[in-house]
Amino acid sequence: MSYDRAITVFSPDGHLFQVEYAQEAVKKGSTAVGVRGKNMVVLGVEKKSVTKLQDDRTVRKICALDENVFLAFAGLTADARVVVNRARVECQSHRLTVEDPVTVEYITRFISNIKQRYTQSNGRRPFGISSLIVGFDFDGTPKLYQTEPSGTYHAWKANAIGRSAKTVREFLEKSYKEEDMESDTNVIKLAVRALLEVVQSGGKNIELAIMKRDEPMKILDQQEIEEYVTTIENEKEEAEKKKKKT
Amino acid sequence: MALFDVSGYKNHLELRGNILGTGVRHFNFGTTNQEFAVPAGMDPSGFLKSCSREGQGGVSIDLNHGTTTLAFKFRHGVIVAVDSRASAGSYIASKEANKVIEINPYLLGTMSGSAADCQYWERLLAKECRLYKLRNKKRISVSAASKLLCNMMLGYRGMGLSMGSMIIGWDDKGPGLYYVDDNGTRLSGRMFSTGCGNSYAYGVVDSGYHEDMTVEEAYELGRRGITHATHRDAYSGGVVNLYHMQEDGWIKVCKEDVSELIHRYKKGMF
Image 1: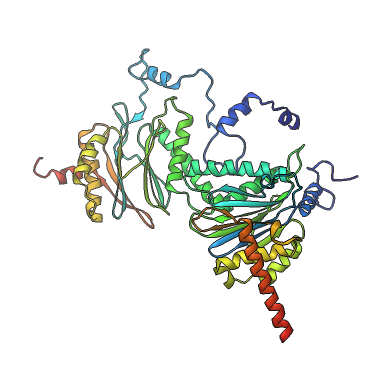
Image 2: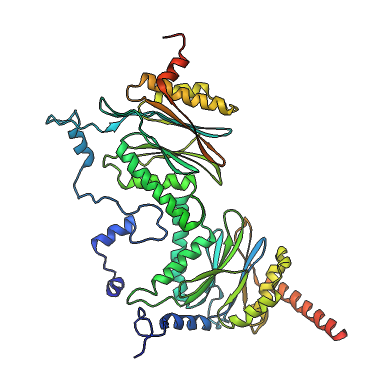
């Protein structure tokens, strides 16, 4: 008897198969990377190449939830649209009732709760997305959270989701240095370097959004990204040369 | 159910829920569901009017009313002073009623109007504040707490609730003082006084207030405000309960009988 039909049923060894299949759907989505620096938070996504007649701007994988929080996802785009919409409403609802902007943890908890509810009601399937949520709290602390289709969430210093997430995460574990995160450029460069590990065609398939404390989110344009990519490639070459010399 | 979701069918309860909010909301900021079901067509305020002395039938149920409470901000925090008389018509139900609810070490609420309404709704507010702290690991802000109370009042607007309350606290934004009443009014300010003795209290505090008061001067001003109001207002009396909201929480300053205080202030007169 297969235990993956009705989502509300546990398998004998304690698995919720639908949730695990949702996680598989996430692994097929394009990569997203998030890095939390001291004064800046960065989200980068791999932009899937568009066909000739398609308008480049209609697919945005980085969405602002409020002035101080934004989100990138990996997985089913349509599912993400629904979640992002609910989160945006909740951000405003929070502002209305509490007269304060949401904390990143609060809105992450809210999104995770929605996701969990869909793993425990009849006739519904889980959301097929993992998301990276970054932003600054009211008191100025930067935050980065990751949510999963199961409804769990964790805080991270740097993380990746989607295709080849494991490779990227290993790269981040090797290259993330606490002291480097003081400089904004280093934060951006780390995110770009992490994405370049898996993105084939270089700068033009990367979309990057940054946010500094007390400033609105900014999506970098193609030129700025190319500059970072060139800097990184130059640094790589110099590191190679040094290796060859010694 | 899934079919209902797809077809867009909403039954009556759900429609109402859309307006007021439904279900177990883990982010439930306050009671969006009405706590008490009111049958359609009922007019509680009309009913209450018919029960009091003005109505017919010889029935006379006078709700507990009448009080004086005041609060003002100054350089060193917020002073809160209340009287302690609970009256039902011309009957003094209690001379030591507690009109300040200590929600948490950083939040106070005062009560004036119908004692039952105040006690119930402010205790409910205290419960919501505790839940907020458990869910968000942070104490609730004064503006949020006053907003919760205000929304509770708005849910029953026009139905005969009677409550004039001040929410006083100290949070990340500094000292906070909000006035909330049964109409759903919510005002932030530097000084408020509520109850039927409020005009007397306003007179005293307005004339004695200056920004650079010392703490002792502020205590004295709060005491005077209540004492003079109880002297002239029949529905206020008992003792003055004085609180001081500071950065690290509130302290209860004193609890003094107004008859002793009035003799002190008006030495030559008696």
